[in-house]
Image (cartoon, rainbow, N blue to C red):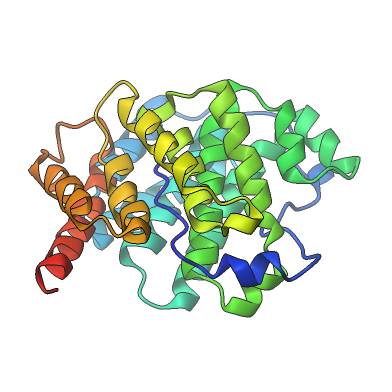
Length: 293
């Protein structure tokens, strides 16, 4: 799962809006069974491979179709739900053009991740007792980090690319849940997916106004933590270039990160190929924009 950031979404307006609902859907937890039905492991492996190798919209859609067929046979298979949440997030981020389509894909992704988390009895119970999802995240364990991270990713994209300003105002508390989820993920598995948890939390601090808790210094520290995590991922330097350097105005640091990203082999670095294709394409765009100024 890849976290690709909030963008600059006018959070000052959002934070000042007063009480609002969560961005999540969080359907009735009593309706969701707590089991993980078996699937044919070869079919599951083939579907996951098709997703991780997707290098175009058509190949990604084909992988999603295959996973959805498997989900019909096992609607509460946690690993499959997380994979589908990630695939729909990538579909919305990398290939969807209209805000309507992006919103639809991010909501589907969000729903799959939420279903996975609500399969955890203690988390379900906390929601039933009235806790917000972010607070209920304290009941989750390391095995839940993949669902937590992809929920945060889908939620961030939903705010950034799938909502109007009014929608962001109405749902801003989902961003607080995002922060709490990522703080918990950082406690549970700080090196997950080559630094995605500190990277995700860094984006929150970048996008949030100072008076509401934003902190570029803290964001920079978290980005460094993500980059220093074991393995080689394109994501932290991409996010640093796109979001942090854009705010600090450090053009040369931005150029250095983008050039590093483009110098990497999308197939051999540790971050997944399907996401690397998207990130390198976006890095080329940003580098071209730098050259035009």
